[in-house]
Length: 518
Ligand SMILES: *Cc1c(COP(=O)(O)O)cnc(C)c1O
Ligand SMILES: *[C@@H]1O[C@H](CO)[C@@H](O)[C@H](O)[C@H]1NC(C)=O
Image (cartoon, rainbow, N blue to C red; front, side, top):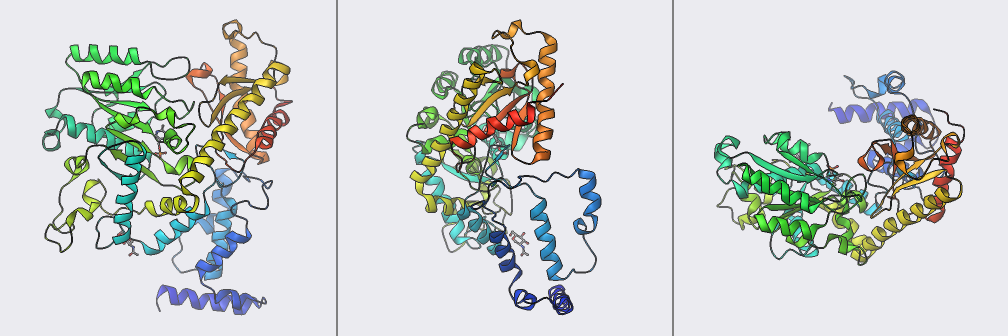
């Protein structure tokens, strides 16, 4: 007996033994059908009940001991009914970004179109390297990239889906390397003068990881100072580049971040582009978070200048409600990906195929087998249209303004909150101040060290209460804008929220923090 037959038999036995009415009918349905029915009944998209807890927190120790059997990999197949139950348990124990009170990361609810696209992707199990095994997907990705290039204002170029924005940023480093030091492909980094990568203090950590991963070393990354809003200081960038060149270093690339991970602000891309032009340096725009503003008529100006970039990364899996993972890398240099990565594996990318070989897109990337990420994006885009997506981006930006206003009001009336920065996109940074710590002078330099220390301890304590209560999830961190004192980063990532939901958040902080003592 094959494993599947075995499992089916055990599953029949299980249903016969259980004698529960309807089980037989249920088990004549496929596992796939049954899990889809379950998700529907479980209200996976929170259409009916948005007040059920977002998390039922269990410590890692208890999770491992209470579910030891289920989490293990058995020798013998388990009956299908048991497997189905196991899957339901996994669902019940998970935190879903679909929850309307999930504000913990830079993404929120996934659109149904995306889940369906994902399902079909997995059912087909195509690898998007050659046209012969992925005819629709290779063409779909090419066409989507063409449209995205236009959207961001590139005249020429190409693009690919990458497994996440961090990897996309590493691709950008690779492209810059290939453009600046074509010989390094054969000879390695030893053949190059010491290279420098310029990012802002607020840039994403993947640039540092990328520099190290690709052999340039973390010290190759120059963190340029930011202004009081968290934007790269362009004069400081110019000074760094000038003095590095004088010292025999080679500027490899400059990264302008469009929507920084914590503050959500946009570097002045046009001004950064001017410096890149002046010194002939590769410009990469990290639009992983904020690139989605391109879809909004009223916000796309934040990305002015991005058409001058040599490369750009963007994560539809953040603001656009496409599920993980869906990221893309664009470059305005046609053929750059092949030049940087192509190796023409003879068994896969035969040049004498009977169809045009440029439809085999797999040699542009560093993966061999590559999962299709474009179908879910395509499904969402068709389902909502560009205008619908733009509206959702707008709505998230608007929620952030509304929350910031509510917090600023509280700051004035009872001092229970303090707004750290006016939001430029979806992220709102603030402190909740428990009653015992209120009434400080507005001037930060007039607050004493012990007050700052106490404030630093508030967020972790409150996060514990919030998580155990399960009423919402919001992240906190130390950052330059908060004097490296823990503060909240509320990501207005849920487009089904309204201003009332923002009011509720303010209320929840008071509920959790009222009697907090640090
Ligand atoms: C999230 C983010 C990334 C990384 O994207 P992943 O898909 O999580 O790897 C890179 N840059 C910025 C600015 C981001 O916010
Ligand atoms: C699914 O496709 C991937 C990529 O081509 C392949 O590695 C994998 O073996 C496939 N799975 C099955 C069960 O065929």
